Length: 103
Image: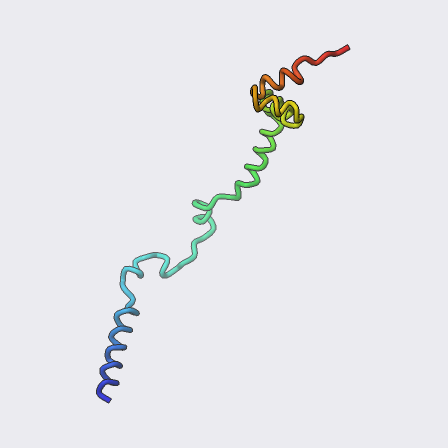
């Protein structure tokens, strides 16, 4: 019986020590009102910029540098790509597509 009372007192002391609500947690403004209004939320949460990034990527695809277009043309033609591995893409493009003859 005596050990039961001692264990009970010990359990109460441990519970009081671990469950004590300190004043530091009450100093925060979020303790009373954890939610903020929409205007303050918009101050640090920006709109979804993925759509803007996708549209910028599409614009960049439309206006590629001539070297990039030549490289893509060369990559689509397998012999040109093999030549490019050895001599570089500008030389490969000139070799296969640079001397276009028109009649």
